[in-house]
Image (cartoon, rainbow, N blue to C red; front, side, top):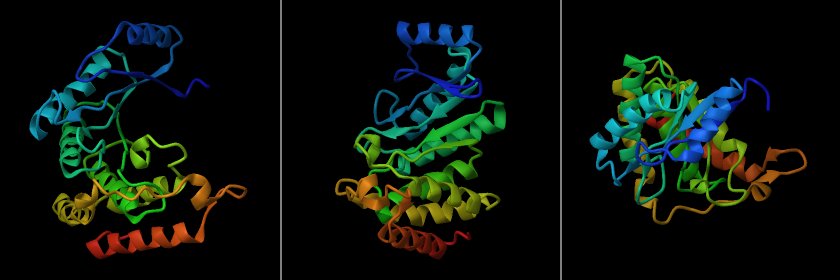
Length: 237
């Protein structure tokens, strides 16, 4: 690692820390490392509903500075039932939280991406797009994604999901919030009924040429199809 790399330490849900993490923080500070404090508030868990979880999420940002001496905070409100950061509820939490942090503090905030669907599926790309739109419109500095298939399946993540995240962020920059909300409402409606049956998608080896590290023609067609849907919803690339 080099001096510009971030060193991670995690809070525990909600707003807790253990002795091991305190020791890690002491080690990082002793080396003058860049500290990235991570925490994913759970919607539907101890925090409660949307508004309550947003309050906890704002508190975790502040706590990252006070408790962890963090250089920046990695967010990621997650749904207790679906294990996803891309649901309608968690997007509201992430958006409200980041808008508040951006308005009233100088804290740098990132967000983690955990779609339900796997790579090489339209649903996965649309899920990532919804979060990218939310993050960009609410003032998020860092987009940390994409951990497809909820980030729990081996080899189920590729660069194409991150590409969509980045292209959508660029397309969202400067769009009025009222228009953003209209696009998001229609976008989330396209996939939110499919969480329980989200397509598993393909592994990196199945949707990429591993020798040239390029996506297959199939994935390019899926990608173009998802992008066309976003354009039909009003996003201009």
